[in-house]
Image (cartoon, helix red, strand yellow):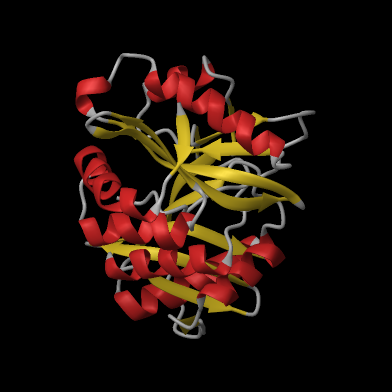
Length: 275
């Protein structure tokens, strides 16, 4: 039922991807050819062409090889027929046979948590969301937009070694997407943050630092650059910044292909999932 996509399948899969998620055909092609890569795009084909797809993007977590399921969708005419349930089962069996230890994903909507839970996934890598005022500090120093894809991978390894890690090509596409949406990266020797400016609020979609004070310095430098006085911050549930602050939020899910392992302190974020 499930097969690996061939080059001739890509145009039809791009149309299926755009139908499900919007965006452009060009972006859909980049997802399949660069983010996932050859041999990592699976489909279900019927007489009229592809009716379901799934990108099994190669990732690692604590030295274990895994897949990040992205672009999981079925043709609208086939929804509710059990095709995706069977596809998830068969792709999981293929990956297990190739030595993969897990698959992880980010449900596209709240209702899909139950869908995936019934198919062997469990909640993991949650988030914590909080708001803080940013004090004025004219002495705060930081670099802006100096992080490359390779550097982001290294920063993740340093500050969040329990992260689900993409390869360099994956991070190139993630950063390209973030920059196209107006993201700014602020960094020092003690941490980094990725934020969007929304009126008088800096929306930090990722923030890692060696201490609360180091994180505050990043925000203060960003305030000096933008004039924004409030920060909206999204942290991993297990991060030790601003402990006791914020509200938990479900985010990722994981399915183990063999013996389960501890993911209570694992982190996943910015996996080409920003809208």
